[in-house]
Image (tube, rainbow, N blue to C red; front, side, top):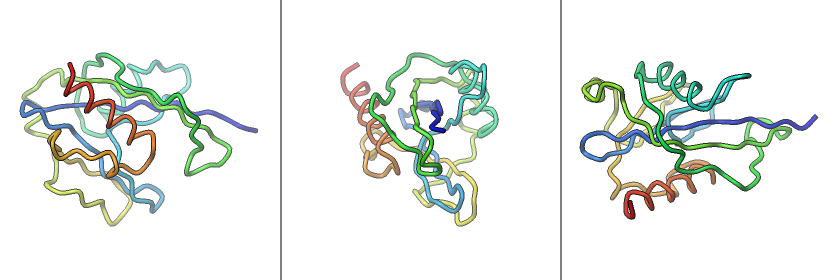
Length: 150
């Protein structure tokens, strides 16, 4: 039986205009993506994104506009019976002072063990080809377009 999964991700920027990127090892595969994850049954995009940010970063957010969603078919890298559709939203921390307390790292190093770390990236240093999947690469280009042409 073929299935679909819906995923939501957040573009979170700090006061310096840097974008938060997630560096993850999942099922022993290295991934470069954005904070976020799957939408659970009967959950809205906004509720799912708020839950994911709380789980991953212990950060309360406000969900703003949808910046990008993939309108092309993508088969999951983890299950060939699943098609993935991802939505990317601009988000803001409810308390911007909490951003300086987030645990982040300086470089693009992915954890050796399954887990996730975060990295702030300036718009000038952001390259779509650093991201693992075509969806995130396209979303990165969309985010860069919105920051260059507001």
